[in-house]
Amino acid sequence: MSSIKIECVLLENCLCGESPVWEEASNSLLFVDIPAKKVCRWDSLSKQVQRVTVDASVSSVALRQSGGYVATIGTKFCTLNWEDQSVTVLATVDKDKKNNRFNDGKVDPAGRYFAGNRRSVYRLEKEEQIPDGMCIDADGKLWVACYNGGRVIRLDPETGKRLQTVKLPVDKTTSCCFGGKDYSEMYVTCARYGMDPEWLIRQPEAGGIFKITGLGVKGIPPYPYAG
Image 1 (cartoon, one colour):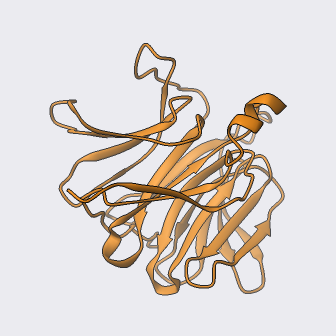
Image 2 (cartoon, rainbow, N blue to C red):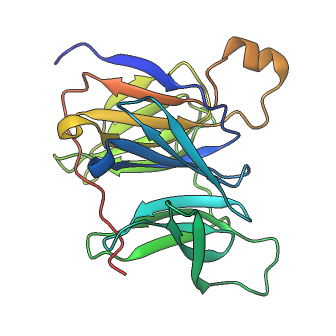
């Protein structure tokens, strides 16, 4: 296995970065900053980042087969046209629950967009780590970002055995995805929300976007929403 390299490629200072998705057509990484109500697109070639601000907390973004993107904004499934920054509501859930919102979302192999709310949190280990966003590699193994654990771990989904651990220089790792040329790079989002000044001094890259290379495995392209 080649040597693993971890670098912060974008000092975005996300309050809570989440939902990284690689867009092969533009060599870009999409992600959201949930409380900042922003969908971001970082161009890996130009190193420039574009941002679209929406009207509520945005918890996930995904590619759309017919073009553009879809996102979960508040309790709404929406389309997002990047060119004119317009948002169109596809569906709204939990209209009677004002303080609720979607927490995360993913598109399945059939092109269906699934999203969950904030009601369920599961503890992973004794070390106060919480399993957060995840992705699957080309070998069918699961990669999980551990919130408050400062790491991503590779698991065998059939046995539950931990196969690999990659430690990052920030504690609040939130999600991960594969991208880059042939999907051999991993991108990790993280948060800085709730960190006091001393904590931020120790971890100045908190809220940034990290790239991990040399893992020795490749990912698979993200599934686009079919609608």
